[in-house]
Image (cartoon, rainbow over all chains, first blue to last red; front, side, top):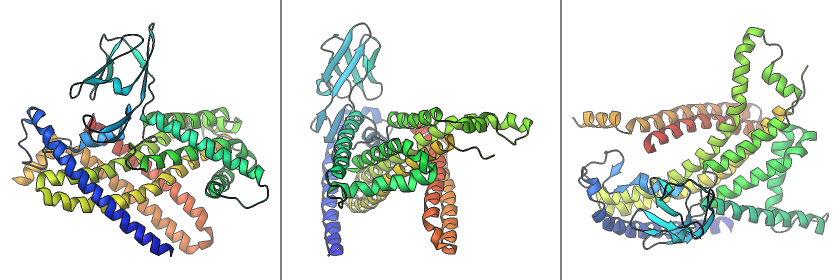
Length: 380
Length: 81
């Protein structure tokens, strides 16, 4: 029954995704065709598709220019099409100009020619210029703080709301139905909570101290899982929250802060005056240990960012392959690549589902190890 | 001649970054392969400790992968920077 359903589901997904990718490839290649005329001068050194090996520039379709905007943070949630005839959801822009005050307007206010877009702040009158290469600058050169609600911030707010509602309703259901079997959403969340507690926190930190760190570990675990999974839902703007370095910096800093604040005598002792090490060797060991203290959260940060970004890049590369083949080897090759790419994308999606949970697990596990390190018992 | 052109392209363009990504992948591949081998052998010897081993295997693989990702990030910086 279940396998029958799974089979039908897989076939249906394959057909739908294959169809969609072909249609997208088709329309996109037309769009790129129009694009050729106004940007042909910039490509004067490359006659169209003469060589597949020129710095990754394949004719007119440049995979880099296609992939990077998709994984980078943005000021709007982009659904489909390009910015002339596509559809995207504008997000609020918030700027603080020193001495002048705040500006608040929607990102749809940005108007202008092909690449350079301008908007005037309603409060301060500052003219903001948005360019894909330089980012957002002001016309008069005034410095300002950009605290806009970007795509990632919006995604995080969405996830936080979702998690608060879900986890609170779960917590409530335990007091409402004491001693009974869990129902509904609780069935999904309870194993995850128990997994974090029984497989990560308790064995690593120890039974007595685990409760102190459990709220943080659970929060990070659920936040990372939810944002990874949100990034995997296609056609809703391609959120890349945990692939944004700013997000993981804060997560890693929280881990660093908690382990530093909770560091006990044994932890600092091992760091600055390792017992049982000859004095001369201490000269070598102590700097390494101190350096390692800062390196640990840095690696934590890079691992999560790079893993999630890499997953997005791989999937987008398969999409790019369709355009590249369409352009360099003709339409038939494009169609063929569409089928091939779709199959590989489905495979990558399943792999990314695994990675979404694995990275949350690894982050939580390493955070737990650092906390356990900071609160270790003296062994002597 | 073709080969020479390709080699020239590689050494002058961003091809070196691509080679770097490949080397990073080799390193990670060897590392994760060794971890998987060791874990499987240990699990075969002591099936009752599988759960413990699995957690540590994933941890070690994540550490190896982290180093490889450093390499990938640097390659990306070269290409995009």
